[in-house]
Amino acid sequence: MWSCTGASGPGAKSGGTSTLPDSGPAAPGTGAIPPDRRIAWKPGIPGGIPRRTQVCATINAASYGNGTTDATSAIQAAIDACPEGQVVRIPAGSYRLNDTLQISKGIVLRGDGPTATKLLLGNAGVDGVIQIGSDAPNDIPGVAVQSGYTKGSTELVLRDASSFKVGQIVLIDQKDDPSLVATGDCEFFKRNVGGFRSLGQIFEIVSKNGNTIGISSPLYHTYLANLSPEVSPIHPDDTVKNAGVEDLYATRTSDFGGQGFIIHIVAASESWVKNVETEKVSGRHVSLETCYRCELRDSYLHDAWDNNPGGTAYGASLDRHSSDNLIENNVVYLLNIPIVMSVSSGGNVIAYNYVDDAILADTPAWQMADIGTHCSFPYMELIEGNWIAHAAADNVHGGAGFLTFYRNYLSGQHLSVPATGNVVSFDLEANALYVNVVGNVLWKQGVTGVAETQCDETPALYRLGSYLEAGDMCSNDPRVGKTLFRHGNFDFIRNQVEWDPNVSDHDLPPSLYLSSKPAFFGSRPWPMADPTRNPPLGTLPAKERFDTELKR
Image 1 (tube, rainbow, N blue to C red):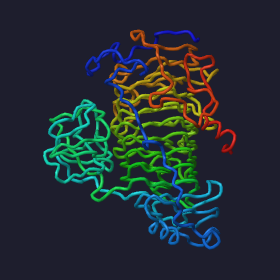
Image 2 (cartoon, rainbow, N blue to C red):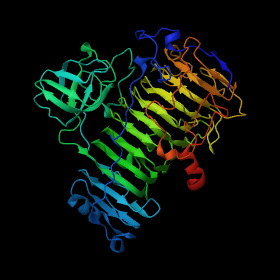
Image 3 (tube, helix red, strand yellow):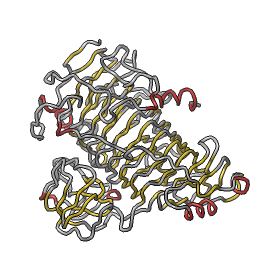
Image 4 (cartoon, helix red, strand yellow):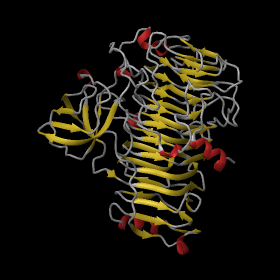
Protein backbone atom coordinates (compact mmCIF):
# COMPACT_ATOMS: atom_id res chain seq x y z
CA MET A 1 0.00 0.00 0.00
CA TRP A 2 1.28 3.44 -0.90
CA SER A 3 1.44 6.11 1.76
CA CYS A 4 -1.48 8.51 1.93
CA THR A 5 -1.69 12.25 2.37
CA GLY A 6 -4.32 14.95 2.25
CA ALA A 7 -1.97 17.55 0.80
CA SER A 8 -2.44 19.81 -2.20
CA GLY A 9 -5.85 21.33 -1.54
CA PRO A 10 -9.38 20.11 -0.85
CA GLY A 11 -12.12 19.71 -3.38
CA ALA A 12 -15.24 21.81 -3.72
CA LYS A 13 -17.11 20.13 -0.90
CA SER A 14 -14.26 20.62 1.53
CA GLY A 15 -13.48 24.25 0.91
CA GLY A 16 -13.87 27.17 -1.49
CA THR A 17 -17.03 28.83 -2.75
CA SER A 18 -18.94 26.21 -4.68
CA THR A 19 -22.41 27.42 -5.62
CA LEU A 20 -23.75 23.87 -5.71
CA PRO A 21 -25.95 22.84 -2.80
CA ASP A 22 -24.42 20.53 -0.22
CA SER A 23 -26.01 17.24 -1.15
CA GLY A 24 -24.33 15.15 1.50
CA PRO A 25 -21.83 12.32 1.13
CA ALA A 26 -21.49 10.17 -1.95
CA ALA A 27 -23.05 6.73 -2.04
CA PRO A 28 -20.70 3.74 -1.70
CA GLY A 29 -19.04 2.65 -4.92
CA THR A 30 -19.04 6.09 -6.59
CA GLY A 31 -15.45 7.05 -5.87
CA ALA A 32 -16.68 9.44 -3.15
CA ILE A 33 -17.90 11.84 -5.85
CA PRO A 34 -20.80 13.95 -4.54
CA PRO A 35 -24.07 13.12 -6.35
CA ASP A 36 -24.58 16.61 -7.74
CA ARG A 37 -21.29 16.23 -9.63
CA ARG A 38 -21.94 12.84 -11.28
CA ILE A 39 -24.54 10.70 -13.01
CA ALA A 40 -25.04 6.98 -13.63
CA TRP A 41 -23.07 6.55 -16.85
CA LYS A 42 -24.64 3.97 -19.19
CA PRO A 43 -23.12 4.78 -22.58
CA GLY A 44 -23.33 3.24 -26.00
CA ILE A 45 -25.68 0.82 -27.69
CA PRO A 46 -27.88 -1.07 -25.21
CA GLY A 47 -26.67 -4.67 -25.25
CA GLY A 48 -23.62 -3.78 -27.33
CA ILE A 49 -23.01 -3.58 -31.05
CA PRO A 50 -25.21 -6.12 -32.88
CA ARG A 51 -23.52 -8.66 -35.12
CA ARG A 52 -25.24 -8.50 -38.50
CA THR A 53 -24.88 -11.74 -40.47
CA GLN A 54 -27.06 -11.43 -43.55
CA VAL A 55 -25.08 -10.08 -46.52
CA CYS A 56 -27.19 -8.26 -49.08
CA ALA A 57 -24.35 -7.59 -51.55
CA THR A 58 -20.65 -8.29 -52.02
CA ILE A 59 -18.64 -5.81 -54.07
CA ASN A 60 -16.73 -7.39 -56.97
CA ALA A 61 -13.08 -7.09 -55.91
CA ALA A 62 -11.79 -8.16 -59.30
CA SER A 63 -13.59 -5.26 -60.99
CA TYR A 64 -13.31 -2.57 -58.32
CA GLY A 65 -10.59 -3.56 -55.84
CA ASN A 66 -7.56 -2.81 -58.01
CA GLY A 67 -6.84 0.64 -56.56
CA THR A 68 -7.39 2.51 -59.83
CA THR A 69 -10.99 1.91 -60.97
CA ASP A 70 -13.52 4.29 -59.43
CA ALA A 71 -15.60 2.08 -57.10
CA THR A 72 -17.82 4.84 -55.72
CA SER A 73 -20.95 4.16 -57.77
CA ALA A 74 -20.80 0.39 -57.31
CA ILE A 75 -20.48 0.60 -53.54
CA GLN A 76 -23.08 3.36 -53.22
CA ALA A 77 -25.58 1.41 -55.34
CA ALA A 78 -25.12 -1.63 -53.09
CA ILE A 79 -25.66 0.53 -49.99
CA ASP A 80 -28.81 2.11 -51.45
CA ALA A 81 -30.31 -1.28 -52.39
CA CYS A 82 -29.45 -3.05 -49.15
CA PRO A 83 -32.40 -3.74 -46.81
CA GLU A 84 -32.25 -2.52 -43.21
CA GLY A 85 -30.36 -4.81 -40.87
CA GLN A 86 -28.16 -6.34 -43.57
CA VAL A 87 -24.52 -6.00 -44.64
CA VAL A 88 -22.73 -4.66 -47.70
CA ARG A 89 -19.45 -6.60 -47.80
CA ILE A 90 -16.34 -5.13 -49.37
CA PRO A 91 -13.82 -7.96 -49.74
CA ALA A 92 -10.05 -7.59 -49.65
CA GLY A 93 -8.71 -5.05 -52.13
CA SER A 94 -7.98 -1.35 -52.61
CA TYR A 95 -11.04 0.64 -53.69
CA ARG A 96 -10.63 4.07 -55.24
CA LEU A 97 -13.36 6.56 -54.28
CA ASN A 98 -14.10 9.93 -55.86
CA ASP A 99 -17.05 10.85 -53.66
CA THR A 100 -18.34 10.30 -50.13
CA LEU A 101 -20.18 7.05 -49.43
CA GLN A 102 -23.53 7.96 -47.88
CA ILE A 103 -25.35 5.62 -45.46
CA SER A 104 -28.87 6.81 -44.75
CA LYS A 105 -30.43 3.72 -43.14
CA GLY A 106 -29.58 0.97 -40.69
CA ILE A 107 -27.19 -1.15 -42.74
CA VAL A 108 -23.57 -2.16 -42.12
CA LEU A 109 -20.62 -1.48 -44.41
CA ARG A 110 -18.09 -4.21 -43.63
CA GLY A 111 -14.67 -5.07 -44.98
CA ASP A 112 -12.47 -8.12 -44.49
CA GLY A 113 -10.27 -6.31 -41.96
CA PRO A 114 -8.24 -3.08 -41.83
CA THR A 115 -5.18 -4.72 -43.41
CA ALA A 116 -7.22 -6.23 -46.24
CA THR A 117 -10.03 -3.86 -47.31
CA LYS A 118 -8.83 -0.34 -48.11
CA LEU A 119 -10.94 2.65 -49.14
CA LEU A 120 -8.87 5.38 -50.82
CA LEU A 121 -10.52 8.78 -51.31
CA GLY A 122 -8.71 10.47 -54.18
CA ASN A 123 -10.87 13.55 -54.82
CA ALA A 124 -9.33 16.48 -52.94
CA GLY A 125 -12.56 18.47 -53.25
CA VAL A 126 -14.78 15.97 -51.38
CA ASP A 127 -15.43 16.34 -47.63
CA GLY A 128 -14.81 12.77 -46.55
CA VAL A 129 -14.89 9.02 -47.07
CA ILE A 130 -18.04 7.76 -45.29
CA GLN A 131 -21.01 9.60 -43.79
CA ILE A 132 -23.77 8.00 -41.73
CA GLY A 133 -26.78 10.30 -41.55
CA SER A 134 -27.17 13.78 -42.98
CA ASP A 135 -26.34 17.25 -41.76
CA ALA A 136 -29.06 19.33 -40.16
CA PRO A 137 -29.32 23.08 -39.58
CA ASN A 138 -28.90 24.61 -36.13
CA ASP A 139 -32.03 26.74 -36.41
CA ILE A 140 -34.69 24.02 -36.10
CA PRO A 141 -37.52 25.59 -34.07
CA GLY A 142 -38.06 24.35 -30.53
CA VAL A 143 -41.04 23.96 -28.22
CA ALA A 144 -41.00 25.36 -24.68
CA VAL A 145 -40.64 22.93 -21.78
CA GLN A 146 -43.09 23.90 -19.06
CA SER A 147 -42.07 21.49 -16.29
CA GLY A 148 -40.12 18.35 -15.47
CA TYR A 149 -36.74 19.82 -16.36
CA THR A 150 -34.88 18.93 -13.16
CA LYS A 151 -31.86 16.61 -13.00
CA GLY A 152 -32.96 12.96 -12.97
CA SER A 153 -36.36 13.61 -14.56
CA THR A 154 -37.59 11.17 -17.24
CA GLU A 155 -40.76 13.09 -18.16
CA LEU A 156 -41.11 16.54 -19.66
CA VAL A 157 -44.27 18.59 -20.05
CA LEU A 158 -44.16 20.63 -23.25
CA ARG A 159 -46.23 23.63 -24.22
CA ASP A 160 -47.37 21.65 -27.28
CA ALA A 161 -46.14 18.11 -28.02
CA SER A 162 -48.26 17.59 -31.14
CA SER A 163 -45.29 17.77 -33.52
CA PHE A 164 -43.33 15.04 -31.71
CA LYS A 165 -43.66 11.25 -31.92
CA VAL A 166 -42.48 8.20 -30.00
CA GLY A 167 -39.11 7.00 -31.29
CA GLN A 168 -37.97 10.48 -32.30
CA ILE A 169 -34.49 11.67 -31.26
CA VAL A 170 -34.70 15.15 -29.80
CA LEU A 171 -32.65 17.79 -28.00
CA ILE A 172 -33.36 19.78 -24.87
CA ASP A 173 -31.34 22.97 -24.48
CA GLN A 174 -31.47 26.33 -22.75
CA LYS A 175 -29.99 29.78 -23.22
CA ASP A 176 -26.53 30.15 -21.73
CA ASP A 177 -26.25 30.48 -17.97
CA PRO A 178 -23.54 33.11 -17.38
CA SER A 179 -22.60 31.49 -14.06
CA LEU A 180 -21.48 28.39 -16.01
CA VAL A 181 -20.89 29.28 -19.65
CA ALA A 182 -18.41 32.07 -20.26
CA THR A 183 -18.99 32.42 -23.99
CA GLY A 184 -21.47 30.88 -26.36
CA ASP A 185 -19.55 30.94 -29.60
CA CYS A 186 -18.84 27.82 -31.70
CA GLU A 187 -22.17 28.82 -33.24
CA PHE A 188 -21.86 26.01 -35.80
CA PHE A 189 -22.48 23.52 -32.96
CA LYS A 190 -25.48 25.06 -31.18
CA ARG A 191 -28.82 26.72 -31.66
CA ASN A 192 -29.04 30.49 -31.35
CA VAL A 193 -32.61 31.23 -30.21
CA GLY A 194 -32.73 34.32 -28.05
CA GLY A 195 -29.04 33.69 -27.40
CA PHE A 196 -26.67 30.79 -27.76
CA ARG A 197 -27.68 27.47 -26.23
CA SER A 198 -24.53 25.66 -25.14
CA LEU A 199 -25.93 23.30 -22.51
CA GLY A 200 -28.25 20.56 -23.71
CA GLN A 201 -28.87 16.83 -23.99
CA ILE A 202 -30.10 14.41 -26.65
CA PHE A 203 -32.48 11.51 -25.95
CA GLU A 204 -35.25 9.46 -27.52
CA ILE A 205 -38.96 9.98 -26.88
CA VAL A 206 -40.19 6.65 -25.47
CA SER A 207 -43.77 7.63 -24.60
CA LYS A 208 -46.25 10.40 -25.18
CA ASN A 209 -49.41 11.32 -23.30
CA GLY A 210 -50.92 14.61 -24.37
CA ASN A 211 -48.18 17.19 -23.93
CA THR A 212 -46.09 14.96 -21.66
CA ILE A 213 -43.21 13.03 -23.21
CA GLY A 214 -41.22 10.22 -21.58
CA ILE A 215 -37.50 10.28 -22.38
CA SER A 216 -35.00 7.44 -22.67
CA SER A 217 -32.23 8.97 -20.50
CA PRO A 218 -32.72 10.94 -17.30
CA LEU A 219 -31.82 14.61 -17.45
CA TYR A 220 -28.20 15.22 -16.48
CA HIS A 221 -28.71 18.84 -15.42
CA THR A 222 -31.44 20.99 -13.91
CA TYR A 223 -32.64 23.55 -16.44
CA LEU A 224 -33.84 27.03 -15.46
CA ALA A 225 -37.19 28.55 -16.42
CA ASN A 226 -35.68 31.99 -16.99
CA LEU A 227 -33.30 30.48 -19.58
CA SER A 228 -36.18 29.21 -21.74
CA PRO A 229 -35.59 25.46 -21.98
CA GLU A 230 -36.88 24.01 -25.25
CA VAL A 231 -37.13 20.63 -26.97
CA SER A 232 -36.43 20.42 -30.70
CA PRO A 233 -35.82 17.63 -33.25
CA ILE A 234 -32.16 17.03 -34.06
CA HIS A 235 -33.07 16.71 -37.74
CA PRO A 236 -36.08 17.97 -39.73
CA ASP A 237 -36.46 14.46 -41.23
CA ASP A 238 -36.03 10.99 -39.74
CA THR A 239 -32.64 10.18 -38.25
CA VAL A 240 -30.53 7.10 -38.97
CA LYS A 241 -30.47 4.23 -36.47
CA ASN A 242 -28.44 1.00 -36.31
CA ALA A 243 -25.92 1.79 -39.04
CA GLY A 244 -22.31 0.67 -38.81
CA VAL A 245 -18.87 0.68 -40.41
CA GLU A 246 -16.63 -2.30 -39.59
CA ASP A 247 -13.37 -4.05 -40.43
CA LEU A 248 -11.80 -1.77 -42.99
CA TYR A 249 -9.17 0.91 -43.63
CA ALA A 250 -9.97 4.38 -44.97
CA THR A 251 -7.74 7.29 -45.95
CA ARG A 252 -7.45 10.42 -48.04
CA THR A 253 -4.79 10.24 -50.73
CA SER A 254 -4.66 14.05 -51.01
CA ASP A 255 -5.22 16.99 -48.69
CA PHE A 256 -8.76 18.37 -48.52
CA GLY A 257 -7.27 21.59 -47.16
CA GLY A 258 -10.06 22.12 -44.65
CA GLN A 259 -12.30 20.57 -42.01
CA GLY A 260 -13.45 17.39 -43.68
CA PHE A 261 -13.63 13.90 -42.22
CA ILE A 262 -12.89 10.26 -42.82
CA ILE A 263 -16.01 8.91 -41.06
CA HIS A 264 -18.80 11.25 -40.00
CA ILE A 265 -21.80 10.02 -37.99
CA VAL A 266 -24.33 12.84 -37.78
CA ALA A 267 -27.93 13.04 -36.54
CA ALA A 268 -27.90 9.32 -35.78
CA SER A 269 -28.53 6.93 -32.92
CA GLU A 270 -27.19 3.51 -31.92
CA SER A 271 -24.73 3.53 -34.81
CA TRP A 272 -21.07 2.57 -34.72
CA VAL A 273 -17.52 2.37 -36.04
CA LYS A 274 -15.69 -0.82 -35.08
CA ASN A 275 -12.27 -2.28 -35.92
CA VAL A 276 -11.44 0.43 -38.42
CA GLU A 277 -8.13 2.08 -39.27
CA THR A 278 -8.23 5.67 -40.52
CA GLU A 279 -5.14 7.49 -41.75
CA LYS A 280 -4.14 10.95 -43.05
CA VAL A 281 -7.14 13.07 -42.20
CA SER A 282 -7.89 16.62 -43.23
CA GLY A 283 -10.41 17.46 -40.50
CA ARG A 284 -11.80 14.81 -38.16
CA HIS A 285 -10.95 11.12 -38.35
CA VAL A 286 -14.23 10.01 -36.73
CA SER A 287 -16.80 12.64 -35.80
CA LEU A 288 -19.83 11.78 -33.68
CA GLU A 289 -22.00 14.84 -34.25
CA THR A 290 -25.50 15.15 -32.80
CA CYS A 291 -25.30 11.46 -31.96
CA TYR A 292 -27.18 9.47 -29.36
CA ARG A 293 -25.80 6.18 -28.02
CA CYS A 294 -23.27 5.67 -30.80
CA GLU A 295 -19.93 3.86 -30.43
CA LEU A 296 -16.38 4.12 -31.70
CA ARG A 297 -14.36 1.13 -30.58
CA ASP A 298 -11.39 -1.16 -31.25
CA SER A 299 -10.03 1.18 -33.93
CA TYR A 300 -6.79 2.95 -34.91
CA LEU A 301 -6.91 6.64 -35.86
CA HIS A 302 -3.64 8.26 -36.87
CA ASP A 303 -1.84 10.98 -38.83
CA ALA A 304 -3.03 14.07 -40.65
CA TRP A 305 -2.07 16.11 -43.68
CA ASP A 306 -1.54 19.17 -41.47
CA ASN A 307 -0.96 18.83 -37.71
CA ASN A 308 -1.40 22.52 -36.96
CA PRO A 309 -4.36 24.39 -35.43
CA GLY A 310 -7.37 25.05 -37.60
CA GLY A 311 -9.49 21.94 -37.21
CA THR A 312 -7.61 19.82 -39.76
CA ALA A 313 -6.03 17.23 -37.43
CA TYR A 314 -8.64 15.91 -35.00
CA GLY A 315 -8.95 12.25 -34.08
CA ALA A 316 -12.23 11.28 -32.40
CA SER A 317 -14.68 14.06 -31.63
CA LEU A 318 -17.96 14.33 -29.72
CA ASP A 319 -19.70 17.32 -31.28
CA ARG A 320 -22.93 19.32 -31.17
CA HIS A 321 -24.77 17.95 -28.13
CA SER A 322 -23.84 14.30 -28.68
CA SER A 323 -25.01 12.36 -25.62
CA ASP A 324 -24.52 8.87 -24.10
CA ASN A 325 -21.89 7.79 -26.64
CA LEU A 326 -18.95 5.46 -26.01
CA ILE A 327 -15.38 5.83 -27.29
CA GLU A 328 -13.60 2.71 -26.03
CA ASN A 329 -10.45 0.63 -26.62
CA ASN A 330 -9.00 2.71 -29.46
CA VAL A 331 -5.51 3.87 -30.39
CA VAL A 332 -5.33 7.54 -31.43
CA TYR A 333 -1.89 8.71 -32.49
CA LEU A 334 0.07 11.68 -33.87
CA LEU A 335 -2.63 14.30 -34.27
CA ASN A 336 -3.02 17.92 -33.23
CA ILE A 337 -6.16 17.26 -31.13
CA PRO A 338 -6.57 13.49 -30.72
CA ILE A 339 -9.83 13.19 -28.70
CA VAL A 340 -12.00 16.23 -28.17
CA MET A 341 -15.39 17.16 -26.73
CA SER A 342 -17.02 20.16 -28.45
CA VAL A 343 -20.46 21.07 -27.08
CA SER A 344 -20.90 17.46 -26.01
CA SER A 345 -23.85 17.02 -23.72
CA GLY A 346 -23.56 14.48 -20.99
CA GLY A 347 -23.48 10.74 -20.51
CA ASN A 348 -20.55 10.25 -22.88
CA VAL A 349 -17.72 7.92 -21.84
CA ILE A 350 -14.16 7.99 -23.20
CA ALA A 351 -12.50 4.89 -21.83
CA TYR A 352 -9.51 2.56 -22.14
CA ASN A 353 -7.97 4.33 -25.11
CA TYR A 354 -4.24 4.75 -25.75
CA VAL A 355 -3.61 8.28 -27.02
CA ASP A 356 -0.12 9.64 -27.65
CA ASP A 357 2.09 12.14 -29.45
CA ALA A 358 -0.44 14.94 -29.71
CA ILE A 359 1.52 17.53 -31.64
CA LEU A 360 1.54 21.17 -32.70
CA ALA A 361 3.57 20.70 -35.87
CA ASP A 362 5.02 24.20 -36.15
CA THR A 363 5.84 24.34 -32.40
CA PRO A 364 6.44 20.75 -31.27
CA ALA A 365 8.05 21.91 -28.01
CA TRP A 366 4.60 23.07 -26.82
CA GLN A 367 2.82 20.03 -25.40
CA MET A 368 -0.69 19.43 -26.73
CA ALA A 369 -3.44 17.62 -24.81
CA ASP A 370 -4.36 14.06 -25.77
CA ILE A 371 -7.95 14.29 -24.44
CA GLY A 372 -9.68 17.60 -23.89
CA THR A 373 -12.62 19.94 -24.28
CA HIS A 374 -12.69 22.78 -26.77
CA CYS A 375 -16.13 24.31 -27.37
CA SER A 376 -18.48 25.19 -24.52
CA PHE A 377 -20.10 23.47 -22.67
CA PRO A 378 -19.20 19.76 -22.33
CA TYR A 379 -20.50 18.47 -19.01
CA MET A 380 -21.18 15.25 -17.06
CA GLU A 381 -18.69 13.32 -19.19
CA LEU A 382 -16.62 10.39 -17.88
CA ILE A 383 -13.00 9.93 -18.92
CA GLU A 384 -11.93 6.57 -17.47
CA GLY A 385 -8.98 4.20 -17.74
CA ASN A 386 -7.13 5.92 -20.58
CA TRP A 387 -3.33 5.96 -21.04
CA ILE A 388 -2.36 9.48 -22.07
CA ALA A 389 0.17 12.20 -21.28
CA HIS A 390 -1.99 15.28 -20.88
CA ALA A 391 -5.68 16.13 -20.35
CA ALA A 392 -7.15 19.60 -20.73
CA ALA A 393 -10.30 21.65 -20.48
CA ASP A 394 -9.48 24.78 -22.46
CA ASN A 395 -11.12 28.19 -22.32
CA VAL A 396 -10.80 29.05 -26.00
CA HIS A 397 -14.57 28.95 -26.46
CA GLY A 398 -15.80 29.08 -22.89
CA GLY A 399 -14.94 26.14 -20.65
CA ALA A 400 -16.61 22.96 -19.43
CA GLY A 401 -17.99 21.52 -16.22
CA PHE A 402 -18.77 18.42 -14.16
CA LEU A 403 -16.15 16.33 -15.97
CA THR A 404 -14.92 13.19 -14.19
CA PHE A 405 -11.41 11.85 -14.78
CA TYR A 406 -11.27 8.41 -13.19
CA ARG A 407 -8.48 5.82 -13.04
CA ASN A 408 -6.50 7.20 -15.97
CA TYR A 409 -2.74 7.26 -16.35
CA LEU A 410 -1.46 10.72 -17.30
CA SER A 411 2.32 10.54 -17.71
CA GLY A 412 2.99 14.18 -18.59
CA GLN A 413 5.40 12.89 -21.27
CA HIS A 414 4.67 11.97 -24.87
CA LEU A 415 6.26 8.97 -26.53
CA SER A 416 8.32 10.64 -29.26
CA VAL A 417 7.28 14.32 -29.34
CA PRO A 418 9.39 15.85 -26.54
CA ALA A 419 8.08 19.10 -25.12
CA THR A 420 9.54 21.82 -22.93
CA GLY A 421 6.46 24.01 -22.60
CA ASN A 422 2.95 23.30 -21.31
CA VAL A 423 4.16 20.04 -19.76
CA VAL A 424 1.41 19.03 -17.34
CA SER A 425 -0.83 16.08 -16.56
CA PHE A 426 -3.95 18.23 -16.07
CA ASP A 427 -4.45 21.65 -17.63
CA LEU A 428 -7.80 22.90 -16.38
CA GLU A 429 -8.10 26.40 -17.74
CA ALA A 430 -10.48 29.17 -16.69
CA ASN A 431 -14.18 28.24 -16.62
CA ALA A 432 -13.44 24.53 -16.05
CA LEU A 433 -15.83 24.16 -13.12
CA TYR A 434 -16.74 21.30 -10.75
CA VAL A 435 -14.21 18.88 -12.24
CA ASN A 436 -13.59 15.53 -10.49
CA VAL A 437 -10.09 14.02 -10.58
CA VAL A 438 -10.33 10.68 -8.75
CA GLY A 439 -8.22 7.53 -8.65
CA ASN A 440 -5.71 8.53 -11.32
CA VAL A 441 -1.99 7.80 -11.59
CA LEU A 442 0.05 10.83 -12.62
CA TRP A 443 3.48 11.52 -14.11
CA LYS A 444 6.35 9.48 -15.44
CA GLN A 445 8.60 7.86 -12.89
CA GLY A 446 11.99 9.58 -12.62
CA VAL A 447 10.94 12.86 -14.28
CA THR A 448 11.08 15.99 -12.13
CA GLY A 449 8.19 18.42 -11.71
CA VAL A 450 6.03 20.21 -9.18
CA ALA A 451 2.56 19.50 -7.85
CA GLU A 452 0.83 22.60 -9.15
CA THR A 453 1.45 25.75 -11.16
CA GLN A 454 -0.62 28.63 -12.43
CA CYS A 455 1.15 30.40 -15.24
CA ASP A 456 4.81 29.45 -15.50
CA GLU A 457 6.38 26.73 -17.61
CA THR A 458 7.48 24.48 -14.76
CA PRO A 459 6.45 20.87 -15.49
CA ALA A 460 3.59 20.11 -13.11
CA LEU A 461 0.82 17.70 -12.24
CA TYR A 462 -1.80 20.47 -12.43
CA ARG A 463 -2.16 23.92 -13.95
CA LEU A 464 -5.40 25.47 -12.74
CA GLY A 465 -7.45 28.44 -13.88
CA SER A 466 -5.17 30.00 -16.50
CA TYR A 467 -6.23 31.93 -19.60
CA LEU A 468 -9.19 33.72 -18.04
CA GLU A 469 -8.41 36.35 -20.65
CA ALA A 470 -7.56 35.31 -24.20
CA GLY A 471 -3.85 34.85 -24.73
CA ASP A 472 -2.90 35.63 -21.12
CA MET A 473 -1.81 32.46 -19.35
CA CYS A 474 -1.46 34.29 -16.03
CA SER A 475 -4.98 35.73 -15.93
CA ASN A 476 -6.54 33.35 -13.44
CA ASP A 477 -9.98 32.00 -12.58
CA PRO A 478 -9.87 31.00 -8.88
CA ARG A 479 -13.14 29.06 -9.20
CA VAL A 480 -11.32 26.25 -11.01
CA GLY A 481 -9.24 25.28 -7.98
CA LYS A 482 -12.05 25.98 -5.54
CA THR A 483 -14.50 23.68 -7.31
CA LEU A 484 -11.98 20.95 -8.16
CA PHE A 485 -12.49 17.63 -6.35
CA ARG A 486 -9.22 15.67 -6.06
CA HIS A 487 -9.31 12.36 -4.29
CA GLY A 488 -7.23 9.19 -4.31
CA ASN A 489 -4.68 10.17 -6.95
CA PHE A 490 -1.14 8.78 -6.91
CA ASP A 491 1.75 10.69 -8.48
CA PHE A 492 5.35 9.78 -9.23
CA ILE A 493 6.65 13.24 -8.24
CA ARG A 494 5.79 12.88 -4.54
CA ASN A 495 5.33 9.09 -4.61
CA GLN A 496 2.16 9.21 -2.57
CA VAL A 497 -1.60 9.12 -2.81
CA GLU A 498 -3.43 12.41 -2.35
CA TRP A 499 -6.80 12.11 -0.64
CA ASP A 500 -9.20 14.92 0.14
CA PRO A 501 -8.66 15.24 3.92
CA ASN A 502 -12.35 15.94 4.57
CA VAL A 503 -13.62 12.83 2.74
CA SER A 504 -13.29 9.59 4.70
CA ASP A 505 -14.63 7.40 1.90
CA HIS A 506 -11.64 5.82 0.16
CA ASP A 507 -13.70 3.25 -1.75
CA LEU A 508 -12.67 3.47 -5.41
CA PRO A 509 -14.65 0.93 -7.45
CA PRO A 510 -12.95 -0.55 -10.52
CA SER A 511 -15.19 1.45 -12.87
CA LEU A 512 -17.89 4.11 -12.84
CA TYR A 513 -19.72 2.64 -15.85
CA LEU A 514 -18.83 -1.08 -16.02
CA SER A 515 -20.08 -3.76 -13.64
CA SER A 516 -17.27 -6.19 -14.49
CA LYS A 517 -13.97 -6.45 -16.33
CA PRO A 518 -14.41 -5.77 -20.08
CA ALA A 519 -13.72 -8.78 -22.30
CA PHE A 520 -10.90 -7.06 -24.18
CA PHE A 521 -8.78 -7.03 -20.99
CA GLY A 522 -8.57 -10.83 -21.09
CA SER A 523 -6.38 -12.08 -18.24
CA ARG A 524 -4.70 -8.70 -17.70
CA PRO A 525 -5.22 -7.03 -14.31
CA TRP A 526 -8.16 -4.63 -14.15
CA PRO A 527 -8.39 -1.77 -13.42
CA MET A 528 -5.28 -0.69 -15.28
CA ALA A 529 -4.64 2.28 -12.97
CA ASP A 530 -4.88 1.61 -9.24
CA PRO A 531 -3.34 4.28 -6.98
CA THR A 532 -3.38 1.96 -3.94
CA ARG A 533 -1.68 -0.95 -5.69
CA ASN A 534 2.08 -1.54 -5.82
CA PRO A 535 2.94 -0.99 -8.64
CA PRO A 536 0.01 1.33 -9.49
CA LEU A 537 0.03 0.65 -13.23
CA GLY A 538 -0.97 -2.43 -15.14
CA THR A 539 -1.31 -3.05 -18.87
CA LEU A 540 -3.76 -1.27 -21.15
CA PRO A 541 -4.79 -3.52 -24.07
CA ALA A 542 -4.89 -0.59 -26.53
CA LYS A 543 -1.32 0.42 -25.63
CA GLU A 544 -0.15 -3.18 -25.84
CA ARG A 545 -1.72 -3.39 -29.28
CA PHE A 546 0.12 -0.24 -30.35
CA ASP A 547 3.45 -1.42 -28.96
CA THR A 548 3.29 -4.89 -30.52
CA GLU A 549 1.39 -4.35 -33.78
CA LEU A 550 1.05 -0.71 -34.77
CA LYS A 551 4.14 1.24 -33.72
CA ARG A 552 6.22 2.38 -36.66
